[in-house]
Length: 328
Image 1 (cartoon, rainbow, N blue to C red):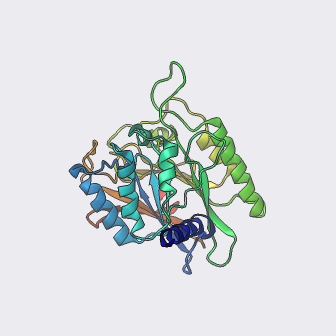
Image 2 (spheres, rainbow, N blue to C red; image 1 turned 135 degrees about the vertical axis):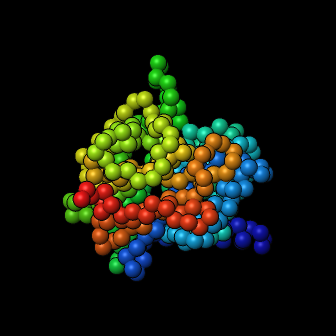
Image 3 (spheres, one colour; image 1 turned 90 degrees about the vertical axis):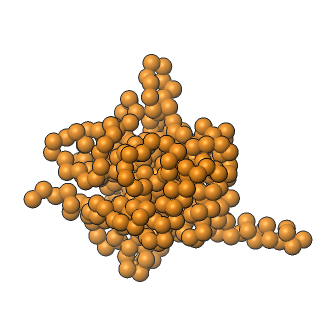
């Protein structure tokens, strides 16, 4: 009987955190996000120890309001235990976290649906996948004003999928047309609730859109950070960036995937930024220290800050957006 009651109470706590407790700007009008990306964790593998250290050190230093995992969380079997170890590390900080998957997560013996089901057992997981569209990890995370219950910002979490299924087109998959239409519909809804004005937004996904290459190769764009690897984006451009420009709400896109890149570049007034590789030694990485990207939103301003927090405690690339990208 005691076990049954305990299980029911656990389900109530999970339900409360996943559904009832909103993300909210604090009393100072700030909201901090830590983006962990490409952890590539392998259970019981010494090569993953640096990833554990990174997660612990970054979250201890930053104490964010939200942890966003942008894909390739696991990289070996057993997939369940690999994922659970990462989520256990995050959960001990008692901070909400959200997940979008990468192209390697479902290669470890479990589908993305099965992995999400495991994640949904965690009380601090606030991922709320949408049914009926391509991918497993598509959803919105509204952030309420610190002064009331109105939405002040929205985070779009998008599944960038895995590999191309188009005959004759090799490489990575892309954000599909139905996902883009879903985003447009969500954007219209939030704008309608905001008096017809686009609600300030950001997007998080794993595989960079082709505009990351265009921006980095442009002679006119200002770029901060490391760019020591070619952008591994899809061969086909399905227009998610263009849709964001048309809707006028997304002011930044944050990705992972390319382990040797952590740069941030402004392109047509949208910040395109990589997270910092957060993993260990299970895959390639040539940056000297692993870490995470931090994003700090300000409810009272369109300006936001971002920086890289390294596992060793150092901070790099502290910039404001759009301020740091305005040419003098």
